[in-house]
Length: 144
Image (cartoon, rainbow, N blue to C red; front, side, top):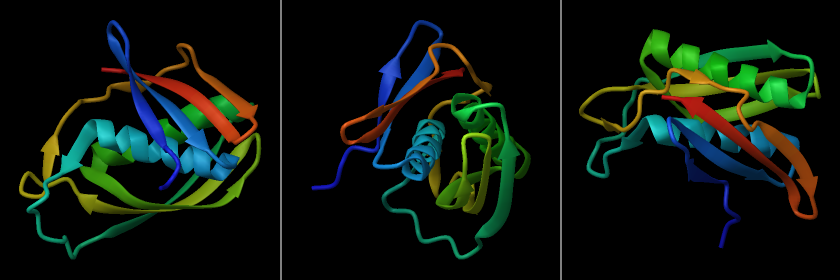
């Protein structure tokens, strides 16, 4: 059985995620996967989409928590501009102040995905990343 990657948190006007990772890279990947799972879900009968786009993402911030917000905000911007859903994420570099990654994405077509939630922004509300005995855990909320 694989470890839990994320879980949804209900909040009055927002939606949040509790995220988990054995290391910081995994935490950031799981946060992105969790965010995209809130936006849309792949239809089980949908055929594999052959057209995939690749994006290079590089973001900087003044600390790990701010970096998480910047990372998710950049991915959200790409999703909005190109109407895509990230399907594979590979983090090549992560420090407390910068992240570099490659993102593969599919078009967010009505035939392959069911829209769930329109996320307006990633927030700093109750933002937290902590190290624990199994790795890292974080909390992030989205304005919907």
